[in-house]
Image 1 (tube, rainbow, N blue to C red):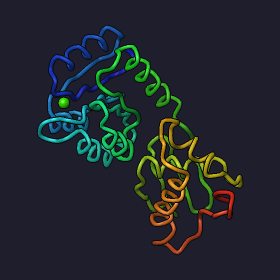
Image 2 (cartoon, helix red, strand yellow; image 1 turned 90 degrees about the vertical axis):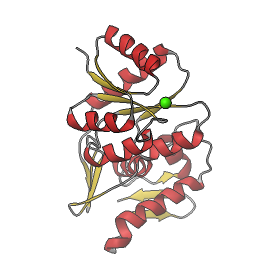
Image 3 (cartoon, rainbow, N blue to C red; image 1 turned 180 degrees about the vertical axis):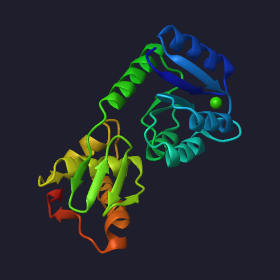
Length: 222
Ligand code: CA
């Protein structure tokens, strides 16, 4: 068996189709048809991955994701979104989704993304620490002086990138390329906005200086 996958999808035909395809590929599959049921299954068993529709009865996919992330920050979640629902994608990624597919999708592409997510899970990174900061890639958690701090997915990825390159000044463009994917068309000031979010969560409550601004260049953590 290659892994266990939870499908949370209210379109029963699609859920059934996915179940058949995934079972055929060698995965063990469980299904839920609404958000509440999906969340309770996800919390009660250890799935290797969750396929989560956004438009669901009872509890929306995004709400399922928010609640899931409190207890299971590490479970890979691939969102299934309606066509052109850009806001859903952005919100979904910020809520901690690992990837998304837009419906309708080719099953081959979905299978490839599932394989990629499962591979990256197995390649789980090592802890990184710089001064007061510690970052745990496997659980996607961060602590300042041992005190856990909740970060959104982008905030986490941005901090991870800075910490892995400690002592190296990274330009806004470099950070934008590494942390946001190539389809993202927000400007370079997006990086400044997220640096402010990080400072508000990590530095300001503690009176610390962790992220240094290098004028006209970018940012560095030393
Ligand atoms: Ca739906």
